[in-house]
Image (cartoon, rainbow, N blue to C red):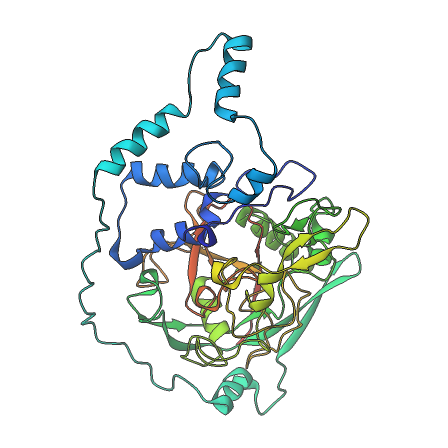
Amino acid sequence: MLHPYIHRPGPESEETMLPVMDYHASTSPLVQMLEKGHHGVTLADADWMRIYEWIDLNCPFHGKWSPPSLARPDHWIRHPVPDQVKRRKELAIAYANVDDDPEAEHDRYAAIVAKREIKPVAPAPAAPDQAKDPTVAGWPMNVHGSANAQLGAIHEIAPVTTKTIIIGAGQSITFRRIPAGAFVMGSKTGYPDERPLAAVRIAKPFWISEMEIQNQQYNAFDPEHDSRYQDEFGKDHVFPGHVGNHRRQPVVRVSWNDAMRFCEWVSKTCNVKASLPTEAQWEWAARSGTDTPFPWGGLDDDFSKFANFADRDVRFQVVGFDGGGNIRRRRPFAIEQNYPLHEERWQDDWFNLNYVGRANCNRWGLYDMHGNAAEWTLSDYAPYPYVEGDGRNARSQKTKKTVRGGSFASRPRDGTSSWRMGYEPWQTVYDVGFRIVMECEE
């Protein structure tokens, strides 16, 4: 039941030692949902430690390290093995002088549990939200309203909505002009950390990179960085995983600190003022005038032309072989396993980290604001309502930072315009990259 909600690498994810926190428990949907306040559930520190330890131990299912004969009885009849518990005890006595049964603790605990009737305790239903929704004049916008807002004051003179800067090493970054304006930030139908809603004003227009920063662009700043591979969820690999370091894929496994250093480098190299977008800037740009979960609609609308999410093709990532010399084969997980978590109804352009810009852009010409790679923002992962001047955008390196947009491994509900998640500023994550903003003249 819980296995689909745990993120962990497969038994042969990569050839090299994995960096600290790359597949940390905090990247698991289970931990993320509980941190957000899943149905009002609250956990004590000891409960969190138990969950984290279980994930760190690779999510053991059987309480004993013995052949799972009950799960696969025919296999063990055809391929009998010695009593492993007995044999381990014999070896421990012979070579370590230890007369101990490490599985006895589980047996004692299982016997105690068997005598008790354990019933799940449902949390009390949440009180209805009585807060009045904020409203903003002129928002949401229709398609023409979004276009006119982007053109803004330059509409009748020279409608310049794109800008490109050269960053060196043969690389450039193209930006889209995002207008000033006001909107309602957050969602009443999303996770608890997306509310209460707030009317937020974007005081000045700004430029934002139309695509996520690519490996080739980031490598102009840090030639040693490697976004590496994405796990194949299988074993007997002849490759370390699905490619994640192609020059046109979004850079991932960069920390918030790394992304900020990239912004400082761009600022100095190109004589501009570059930074990560605040949460408000990111959501305003992603919505592009809409108030629905996505610019193209809601959770029941086909995302396949607009975003690289965890679609039905994700269920076919098991890699197996009929023989070591054969070409790799992708085999499906059983649909009832719900593994990995995904949306079975639709299939987008790719099942893993894709090249940037393969999906359709939003109304303001921005690609991959939803899915592909999740994106760092400047803002602390602080409670709502969002208040621009309360210190959440002060660039502190001591607090979690907000990630937006979801990734190729996210279900649509975990990548809406209002979805948010927090990671440590020094943490590198397998599916998190970024895009940048620049100051813009009025």
